[in-house]
Structure formats: structure tokens, C-alpha cells
Length: 161
Image (cartoon, rainbow, N blue to C red):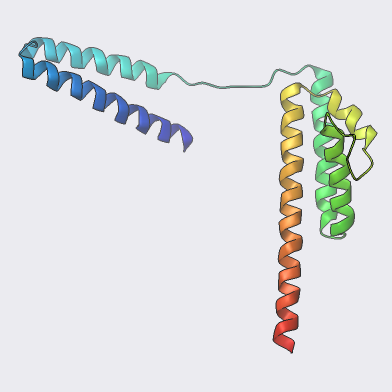
């Protein structure tokens, strides 16, 4: 989906610039029909090359980093599974895991999970950032869920009166 959008934007920008250049040259009488066809063929060939390029960014990990990432992911997944049973306990656990990812964890309201911190430290830097972002997203989702639950409870009380 994203690649299609990028491709569409490139085509749009290229076609606009190329058409503008051609029309300006046509108006000034500088291009012959043969030159115009040659330019169009060259432009199409170049566009074909650029569209054939696929950029892929991957995180290079050694075995220790791979194992650490798998362990960190499984720890987070376990907490997520337990969230439905105990929302507040799960939120506190997520906060402790998140605190382990912070560089300035001096004023954190929960104790840092030092075991998780040791696991995260062994992850690749890019993976550390992804783990932190995932925990932040989960915490936001839990917070939103708690707000929705309170709102629904309030609505139930209002409807029952």
C-alpha cells in the first residue's frame, strides 16, 4: 500500500515536471519531434529503473541480540495476555517494563524491572527503540480502555437512575 502511494507520488511529480519541461521546450521551438520521442523514451527507461528499485531496511542482529529480542517480546506478550484478567496489575507491570527502557528513570513512579532491563540492553539499538514504542502504545491503549470503561460505567449509572 505504502509502496503504491510512493509510486503514485513519484509518477505524479515526475510527469508534472517532465510535461512542464516538454511544453516549455515545445513552445520555444527547441525540440524536434524526434528529440521529443528520444527524451520520452529516456525518461520512461529511467522511471522504469527507479520504480524497479526496492528499498528494504533490516536490523542486523547477532545470535545474542536475536535471543534477547525474542525474550523481551515474549515477556511483553505475557503481560498483554494477563491484561484482561487484571487491568491495573497489567498496567503496573507495563509501567515497570517501560521504566526499564528509559534512560532517565530517576523519577519513575514504579520500580524498574531490572531483569527486563538486562534483556533489553542485550537487544540491538533499533530493537530497543521498537520495544519502547510498543510499550508506550500498549500503555496508551490501556489508559484509553480504562477511560472507556469508566465512561461506560458512568453511563450505566446515569441510565439506571
